Image (cartoon, rainbow, N blue to C red; front, side):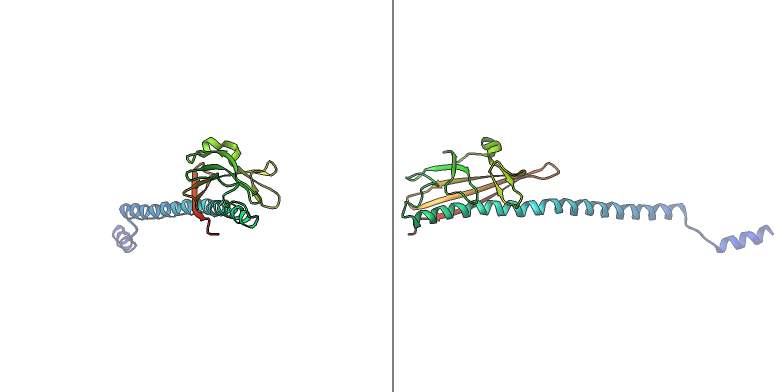
Length: 184
């Protein structure tokens, strides 16, 4: 009878310990890869909306300066009034909002930075979703400043810089540059 049981047991082979360990290792590597992908996708989901908002805020800074220049032409003023001073090499740095008619000049230094600007550069958002530097509204993680540098008598370099901090504490910057001309 002992021989008979042995013969029957040989028919039903199971996994060896080595095969079981290999399968567990393969499954573990697969799960670690999937978890890494989930973490990466989640971090991208946090950055992308902020990058879009920052790019639009930086472009808005350029557009407001362009609007001031065009308004100067319509009012028959010098084209650079309220965005920089006369003469080449004249640099202004400050803050600007969508409804401003002048650059709120804070410095004449083209190397002006967010550390110089501090909370003055922080943007707030109101109940309508409008971003501005005005005192009303809720603080955001976005800071914006604009630097204008008169390069010759008829050319103006405009830099609109936006800085923001993500939920994970990483700080990002975006700078948009445009060149405006007195082509009138």
